[in-house]
Length: 131
Image 1 (cartoon, rainbow, N blue to C red):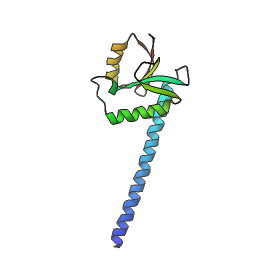
Image 2 (cartoon, helix red, strand yellow):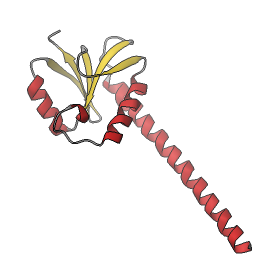
Image 3 (cartoon, one colour):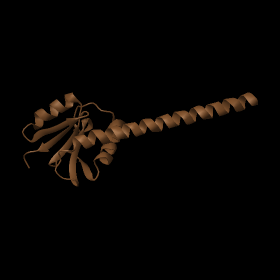
């Protein structure tokens, strides 16, 4: 009985320690997203309004992980607040969360419609030039 009790306490302590480590990793990920996106959106000339957002999942044929894509969209929404993200590139200002290969394909198809403004942390800020 004593051995079982000791093993139970040991397992509980290990689980508690790992849960603390996971929470601190989550905080680090969120902090990194916030910093990356705040630098990326700095050139946007307004503090409130709509901005577009696309990721690999929005590009036909591009590879993506649906769980990651949805999580990144949610993190981006919080990081750019009070700006509001809307899916697509119908806004004047747009964030592209694309890998480099997908970005190259996208920019070739849209090169006359958008100007490149900023790059940071694997994301791009583009501005629609033909409204």
